[in-house]
Length: 52
Image (tube, rainbow, N blue to C red):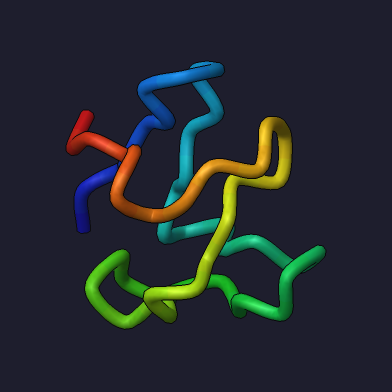
């Protein structure tokens, strides 16, 4: 599974870790993350992330 990086602040979504603060369990692929996901650091939408 690929990691995805926020183009604005550099936050990296790692599928192995998920994003527990937003209820995303470890092992959740980026494709399975909800479209209303926002960066936990700067608040931009999922569309501002790029594959690492």
